[in-house]
Length: 358
Ligand code: NAD
Image (cartoon, rainbow, N blue to C red; front, side):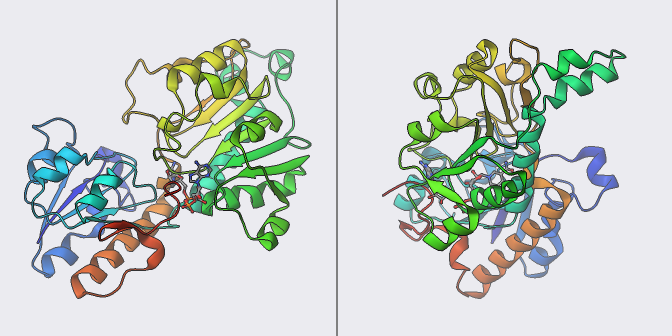
């Protein structure tokens, strides 16, 4: 079989650090495994446009491996050209870069390494909240440029304790965020998810369900997004939704950039409607140099907690999703059943309830 992987370039770092498994150079550690079984393995970072390796090789690939960190966008059109393709494996979590409805129609399976990086992301969410609420970035920039003015930083620095914090999406990441917030003594923890948590889970997480997103955001000092990107979440946080946020609240989005309207969020930060926005996911990746999220700041010069998409690709996470990808491939080659939680789209139907209410 022909296995095509679209990964990000690691350059010097990948040569120096072999645990950067998710890079073009280190190939998810799969080459000898695949070649020993007689398969052809093509690995590339070239993914955009008709002349890219991705679009050329997809024509006769049997298996596609992609990663959300450098997404190869498998559109319906490309699927129609991919005559041999049977399985798409996401090395990581979040398969929105595959047109999932088209995958259902084309009887293409979509699998991901569920849970592989959920702790990594939950930790990033906590860090991002603290970075924003405590006004960390301008404080660090100040000392590094040689200045010292405590009041300039303290005028926009707060404690997380006593705040109302809510998550949109309370799956694996959302629940881990809630449990990690408990020791900070928040005023209240809220969640919105059409898949309600079991009463005992709500109790253990001390989280109250709110059954409307607008109600959730209007009560929160800090909102975090932990839901997949699908028809029901694309552009969810737009100019209209932002009007329902508490003035001066903070928003953390490590789920998917396109859940937020980029220009609307940037305008809300610049006006102070949002005191800050942090995340590692962008509506286009790599993000263009002039993307508004790179430069937006609040009226006091802070409130920007953006990073490149790396929260789910720590070295610890890479080991887990590389191993998970290998297990999925082994199951497939050996005709064994897949771990049910890893199946997003089975043959001809959604198996996951996380990608919208259907
Ligand atoms: P999960 O499937 O365990 O949980 C997702 C939850 O979101 C589900 O409970 C689902 O019901 C809920 N949901 C779906 N649509 C919703 C909506 N409209 N409103 C409210 N809730 C909704 O998934 P997970 O492991 O928690 O991951 C969530 C997402 O985080 C992934 O799909 C991916 O996009 C993103 N992610 C990002 C990174 C990163 O590196 N930044 C890494 C891993 C995952």
